[in-house]
Amino acid sequence: MFRRAELMLADVCAETLAAATESGVLQARVGLTDATGNPLCARVQPATIDWSAAT
Image (cartoon, rainbow, N blue to C red):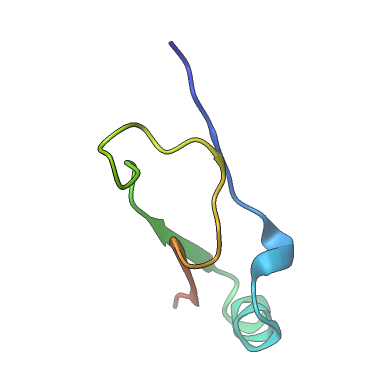
């Protein structure tokens, strides 16, 4: 069975996006399972994902 997690770039805050544009790297940290231990799928909500600009 194949599942996918959808990462919405529109959810990235303006400061992080500006820093990522400058550094050239946008990084997303997200767990691969939901609260019940099942694979994470569908749209990943902003509280579940941590966006950052990497160097």
